[in-house]
Image 1 (tube, rainbow, N blue to C red):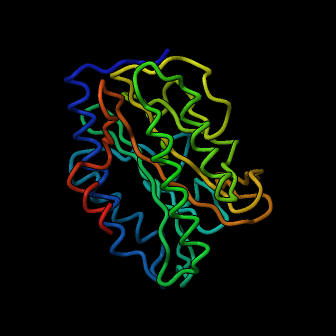
Image 2 (cartoon, helix red, strand yellow):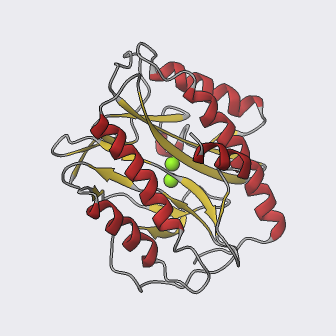
Image 3 (cartoon, helix red, strand yellow):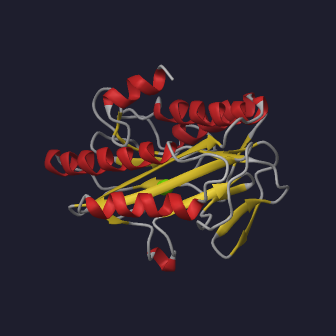
Length: 256
Ligand code: MG
Ligand code: MG
């Protein structure tokens, strides 16, 4: 069942989203050659707990960190470690928290120092895929319209959406119904309605979409590099609201 949030619940999810946005923005300052992902994890953990929130990834089915750090061909669920980042890497940072009982989940991928034009394009197209998916998040549209839009934009740019992993409903729990695939035919599945909150998270690979899982780490089978971009999004009667990207930040991001 897809839960519909009321105004008071949405206000709490907004607060969780704002906090998570501030954590992920702070991390951008520290992503550089020589930095370690365990250092980034420590910053995220401290910011979340200092704000009175709880990192939702830590201990989730035994996950050992508050931040997922996925480098290059790793799609998601990379565990922070003490290996220094290298100039030219691309790093996916995925974080979740629960504030006052309500969840937020968001991720982005960024270059470490100077990256190649082709990897920059991968990151940009992945973010565009997210916005294509969000453009379908209107009452009355069908769930699969989101993934169909993501897939169409990825493929028109020569990329593939990862199929083994999905976006998801989010609210009191990090993972609620429904699953939100990043591919598929339009016009299928439940109708979208105001008050639904979904984590939309395209994972886009330069090569094939097949993945291999080793412990937590999920990597592309052909080791092609992959980018991930995610926000927690509220469906309204008007434009969808990006709970993990407050308005002012969205304007700044558009100008970056
Ligand atoms: Mg996430
Ligand atoms: Mg998620």
